[in-house]
Amino acid sequence: MTYLRNSILATLAYYDILDFPLTLLEVNRYLINPGRLMWISNGIGEINLFYIKKSLDRLVSSDLIGEKNGFYFLSGRENLYDIRMERQKISDQKWKKFLRLARWFIWIPYIRGFLACGSTALGNTTKNSDFDVFIISFPKRLYTCRFFLWFTTSLLGVRRKPSERIAPDKFCFNHYLTEADMFLKYQSLYTAQLYSNLKPVFINPDLYEKFYSSNLWINNYLYNFKPQKDFVRRTIKPFSIFIFIAKVGEAILDSFIGNTLELILKKYQQNRIRKNPLTIETGGRVIYTDTELEFHPHSAEKIIIDKYNKSILSLGIVPYLKETDSGLSS
Image 1 (cartoon, one colour):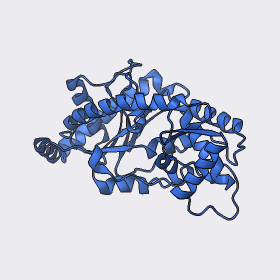
Image 2 (cartoon, helix red, strand yellow):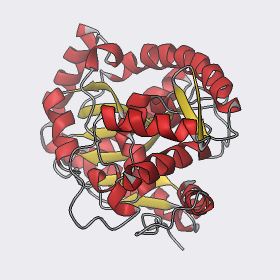
Image 3 (cartoon, one colour):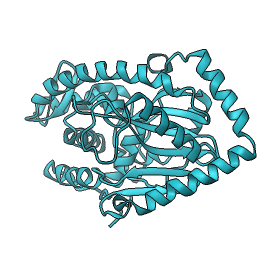
Image 4 (cartoon, one colour):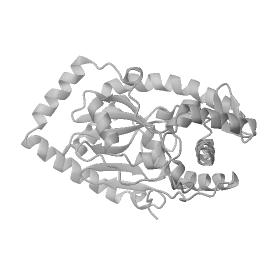
């Protein structure tokens, strides 16, 4: 099946840009939708592990890709195996620290979802990597939630400041949604891959599933993607006292006091965001609304998408749909 061959090559090409070889299960999970690469008049149907493994074996035997100890990569990129092994060791250590620190955020009122994202979630970190976090908050308390996150990270000394280009093991809360509106309108192959890798730290399983059911567009880019449900390995066991503090805090703030505080914090934070020069820089995206906050003023998205488009052309794949960014500022 030519379409599966092209889809596998394109998937390996995308992760080649990240210096990240893939296992069979990962190729299946992140498989770029064949419909983006060529017109398929009769539909695609099921693409299971059996077909993917057969296609991978053929690609290896034809020297279009390489394989080492169950990891697949583009031909000539054997060094990626060693890179991944080294980064995995670093990631394992960072993940332990990440989870230890994440326990201290459970006391914060109105957090409904705390998920690792970026290189932290993918397991592709270096010693200088920070901790990227995706937050889901209670409706109409977005700015209150962000304030308490700022306060806690500052108290612990693990807040990444805007001026820090490199901030190892510090927390970067770069995307917030409220559970009232979890649809992500900025869509691209890059954002699909990014959100497919979110790893739950603490979140109600029903809300986790609701997030992905609100964003079924991900499958337009990743054919076989399904949200992972193995919460046991990643979620943390919370301190009971912190859960109690969060509930008491919400009980106090579910009032005129909380409404007033939210308005004050919203006005203050939006004013600071609006005046920040990074907000209007080109090549990134900064959002500050009642239901969403996003801080990616220096996004790698366009660079990665451009590299991907060039890479698949070099592999002899002329895509049916050329990939573009999700709508970065220009």
